[in-house]
Image (cartoon, rainbow, N blue to C red; front, side):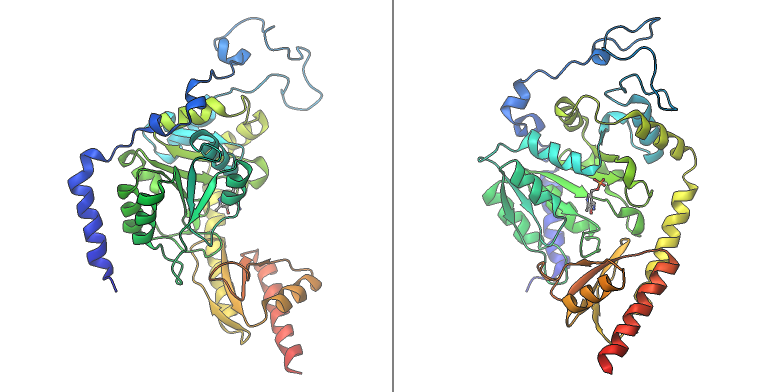
Amino acid sequence: MRTDKRYHADYLKLRIYESDLMAINITSLVRKNILKMKKYASARDEFTGKAKIFLDANENAFGSPADQELNRYPDPLQKQLRDKIAAYKGISSPEGLFLGNGSDEAIDLVIRAFCEPRVDSMMLLPPTYGMYSVCANINDIKIIEVELNKDFSLDVEKIIETAKTENPKVIFICSPNNPSANVYAEEDIEAVLNNVDSLVIVDEAYIDFSDSPSWVKRKDEFNNLIVLQTFSKAWGMAGVRLGMAFSDPEIVQVLNKIKYPYNINDVTANIVIKTLIDPSRKEEMVDKIKKERGFLMNAFSNLALVKELISSEANFFLARFDDPDDVYTYLIEEGIIVRNRSNQLHCEGCLRITVGTHEENKILCEALQAYTKRKRS
Ligand code: PMP
């Protein structure tokens, strides 16, 4: 068996010796047709300055029935919104930020920009977020799987070896991982970044609930790194559909070239700009969710029917039961919906519980206590 410390040291050494060679040629990874094609030039791309009268985009000059001014197309490159988010995130330039209709859009666009259907492959590390494989299947991209270890950690050695033989265009690393809720060791992700010729997506949808730092801060060290974040979780704004991809500006340019021209609407942009003025409500909610996660997991640890609790750095956690299907159906009858993950790799017997409000969490615990009593009688 390898000793983890030495193993990492070996890979990190590799980085020292090869650091000058590590920058990846992004252009060579882009699909040839994407490189060749001309981007759609919208009216707002062709003329961006100020003018007295705009009669160039076939808009309705009379206004709109809505109570906001929505008759004009939004800025295709979302300058104001990107500036605000870049400043909030402390990244060196907004050029390194792509905005999508949820982070799901960024997942799909990376695949479409870089993976040639029926030719290229991408690597997934199951069990993980389901949209990666859905987008791969839609785009007819071969999936190479390297299973997580039983404790849900990365099998770094196997990932690197497989990447060397299979040459996937993209490797998806979800940290904190959905559904296991764990964060991967920084040195493990770093070893992958340094030893593959692929793009590496680190999906940080749940990073605000973790005590580990975000990879956004280290984005400029690796030009093959794409960090995904979203307004859907910690910000409590799943309804506005806004996702972020932080990466080398060259990657952002490719994604902006192939996205729908007006993928971020004005309602979303205006609300998010307003929200960013005072992020304290988000911070408050994150604190509450972490506290409630502690409350729920503590209560679960006292339930005899819970066989195992997987520790969590997200706003959900896995709990293992002897008969997950029965617990799942019982909870539905009680009006409580959780996610049955028991058919996923390493998740045998597991239900995935999203942390709710204190009231909701108490009702869930009481329901499970009642279930236990009923089973005993
Ligand atoms: N990544 C992960 C790991 C997720 O769990 C989700 C949503 N469940 C997403 C991305 C997509 O988030 P968005 O709402 O930004 O599309």
